[in-house]
Length: 296
Image 1 (cartoon, rainbow, N blue to C red):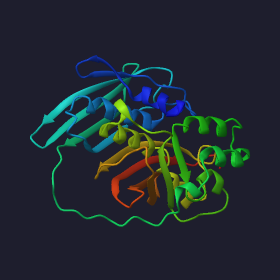
Image 2 (cartoon, rainbow, N blue to C red):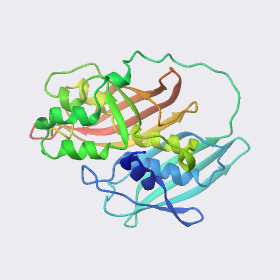
Image 3 (cartoon, helix red, strand yellow):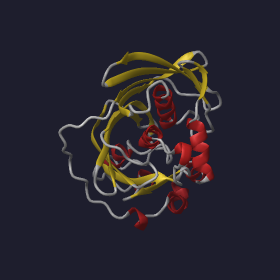
Image 4 (cartoon, one colour):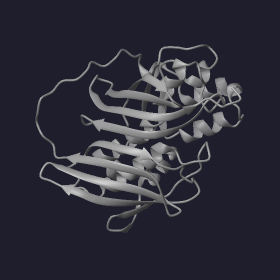
């Protein structure tokens, strides 16, 4: 296991300070707010710790309410909405400095047999043939508004081996509008074993990664590079995920993403997450604030 992955697992290992109240640490961010994927993953960890292990999460719906302070801990209050025979529902409110910054509802289900079908996995190259973030970012560091962004971005993503199939928005900026679609392969930078090899932890890690690139397709549609090159200001507004089948976050997963629309200072992204052998394991939808600075 890499040191970066061990650090991320520590970040997701919340402190229980009351029966249904948990506290999570935060850490320095590339931008002066808590990374949304961190808050979503920690909130799901908090919810999951109040549910029997044989009921993994099958869906979550979340709203980002305020920017989180990366220099302060986050308290997660879990409300036990429902405990049914097949489904369990939890509501989580993340609080910092006395104010809610994030709200999540999550549903958990016992394993059942049922009807089966799925959309086919889209074509994608072998992830091992694609450049790593450590290889890709230095090539484009000259495009960033802050010379240190490439290094900080690589450090922030070191726990996850994330590989773009095509150019990321920061590399495609200024080349004109492109198809509103983006694909990345990802897996944790190291194996999860022993106490870390738990179905819910794999789900929480995928939740963490799901917020990293979902709005890329919005930027590509308009030839924008995003906050790293200073031509767009953005933030996640809401996030929803459905978990369809078991998977491992330490094995290659294809995140196929597209944007059907952008308007009113907002952009919508949706994605499907597939295993390397073609199983659709999760669906994701997110809306984000996507604004062009007035000077542009």
